[in-house]
Length: 232
Image 1: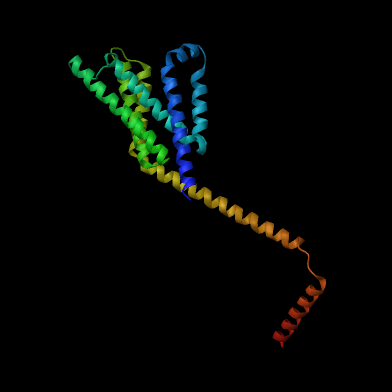
Image 2 (image 1 turned 90 degrees about the vertical axis):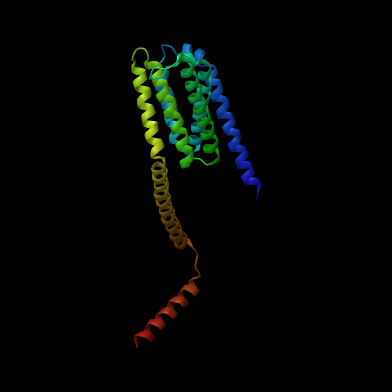
């Protein structure tokens, strides 16, 4: 009885490790991939692929785990280049570098924990708060990095994404409850359809079932006699 849960856990951990490996390679090869994709409409294709995968319940968990590891690896990589980041307020350069490094390490830790929690309890409130929170912190901080010293549209997009992730983090319990209610309605409708199909199938089988004519005649005579007696 314990084999099935053990196999399930092994499969989950294996898929999580695969997602982490893919995310690591994507971050490691980002300069080469960016150079290759230059001039090609890759962003719409990537968004389409990710969106399609998120709509598939079997792939959603693995995509989210891979994205969490991707955010973690990006934060760890950026922690080696804190001099490229800036704070929205004036401060000493050493202090700013220390604060930025601490923030990036916190983001990486949140993202890794989010990936592990998503692997153990897919779609849970804790997992959603963790990965939405990590995404919000990273995108908002990255927006400040690209904003100074000159404003940019990229910063506005990152801030918008970060604020949307922050809102999702705050209402994660409502999102999970809505998903559970939707799954319940879908399961109820599927169960009702299945019962109707079973009833139609049983009716067809009864119609095709062979009956002994003599037994059927005897049964009909008995019912007729019973009805006559009850009428008198």
